Image (cartoon, rainbow, N blue to C red; front, side, top):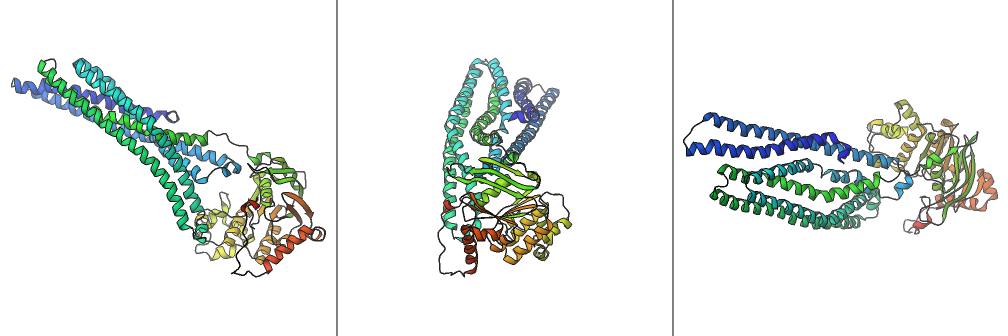
Length: 583
């Protein structure tokens, strides 16, 4: 981590080294002041104020330099850790953005968010005490030389404490690592659970599942708590040992020093400076222990970060999309797609040519592969076999998904969505999406905040905002995945007429489930079981393809028959749906 930003770390270590040198120097100064200034005053009655002032200036000066070292160390240690945290966060987010949709579908969103946030903070937690611990190592080396030069026995006693502390740290680190690793992983699972619960808050409330979700999240939180408690228990024993070893060593030093003083092998000043110096070393020694105690948690978080930033970027499916022949908007050649872990093809041997500037409706029963086909054309998922070609580049292709996603910003933010378009273009797109009327009635018009995921808007309003977001870009290829399902038939007809008029040169491919919508298309493609079973004008398919006429009749009957509120809905097998469609 330090290699990412070595300069501020080097400055922090320099500040810690100055602090360490001044700490040992203060012991030297104390010994000199006691032996050469204070004791002569009492023993010989000599009042030498010049020596007194020199001693006071020496101690105060060393203290000021020592304080400056603390300020430099803390400031630049903080700069180092937060710069590294920023670097890791940017790297994680960059990887998440660059990975294709197929990669994200295999992972929990909340866990990925935790790696960019909680894990980066945990990973750099070990950095703050390291400069101090580094300075402490230098302080120990200098102190041992000073202690042995005063008295070999006292130096040996002080020296024994250091390996004891090192052994204690090693035993602790090996014992606690497994618990911190497990806790960090469980924290990612908990973040994923919270993210999932918040994402589906409307579903949770609609089904009265608040207590169930509370229990589920409580269980995940309990797993994190249990692992953390086990780690904290070990840490409590470790910190108790960190307090006990220096305290016992200090007691032994006092006893040995008193004997040496009584024997006349050391002076009062030397004895005092040894005890003073070891007392000053106790807290820095704990800092070494603290740095090592943070290491397991930081290493576990660091590993989780690198599980994201070290994984190779998967090939972008959009990069494999070719350029269609002149006059063709979309070309599919023997296209097949299989979901990971599924032996069955969701889309199989699709050969399809859609002329440029036409509207083609994709029709089929639930789970037939309609949405999967649109994702293949949009370059969101890679084809398992065959090839996709477009009359325009992928950058000039826009897809409006079945579930509209709005950001927690203003209407303007959601329509422009990073494009450099003015209000006039935004209002034009809103008008084509039949959204201008209700936007004008909003409290602040384009500046109205729509809330997270557009929670303040109805389903139909969200769909129209999402559609305006696509139309403002004037795409060459527009893919609509049942985008107008929440609109009434009249509004839907207006929207489709506007699209036809405003994007007369664009190729439109839309998943449709309304007879009125299907009838507006130039061409209709019927898919059953991932295969194209019919392709042509609506009237011809109605006359020649029984499956198609029966499906359209079912659509009409479904919308014509009143719903009996006492009649429970038919159960739906999730395995029936391979395209994410609504049954």
